[in-house]
Image (cartoon, rainbow, N blue to C red; front, side, top):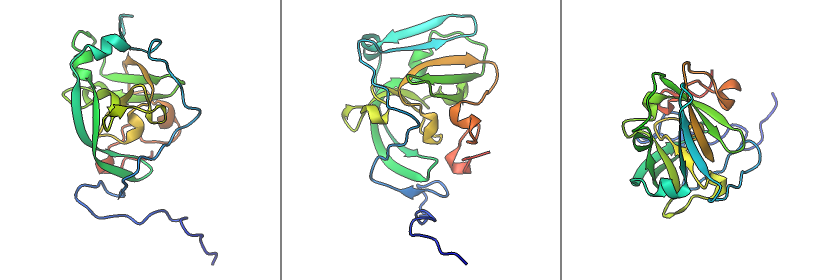
Length: 197
């Protein structure tokens, strides 16, 4: 029987009530991206929510910073099995950004600078569950981690927290985004180990 090189089987799983099944704890902040890192100047940055009627709600950087800002302490979980506990973020709640948005659709597609997409049900963006985050650990968010701003949806695997967020489009159906079209689970609950189809 052929042997396996060290590391081929991955890190040993850890047992902890704070860790979803199959995850290990890390104190690093691994960078995992598909494609080059977009560099977005703050004076060119814009975020919008686009509805089924063609209505567009948009904010430039100054307008985003003028909104109510939350300090968020939360755990994050990557589908590649690392978890990071007690992370610190600052950002604007999606509840604030959706306050004036009227829609009858139940699903969204997040679009990023660079072309990345991921689908998220609207219910998973509201009621204090999600933010447009622009600071991590007291510092502006590095481009490698999605700066100047990214989605933060801590209760789902981290591929749903789209880096370099540019817009959210309301959709009638839960159509798959980039990774979901390439075998990742349509929803991505880490506590249910919804990693892949």
